[in-house]
Length: 115
Image (cartoon, rainbow, N blue to C red; front, side, top):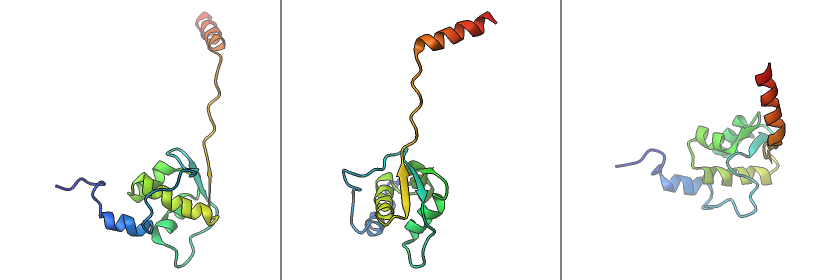
């Protein structure tokens, strides 16, 4: 029995990435990396690359792109590395939330309770 999303034509995935199975150890992409398209899809471009550029018109997480394309995240990262190398996308990590001092938060809570 076939598992949806798992057994989807491995030969197709091999073809999409040109046989590459990893985006490399220095890849800037993880699941929450935000990807932004820097150009429009070009004629003759691989359909998956064009789809990524359309999806990433606004900052979009790698995991969201993979889900929309219905591709494994590892394959999506390989495609994103291709686009990054060509200067067609940029990647940035979301800003980390500020670390708050627990004492200040407790004082705020006490102040709110006293209202």
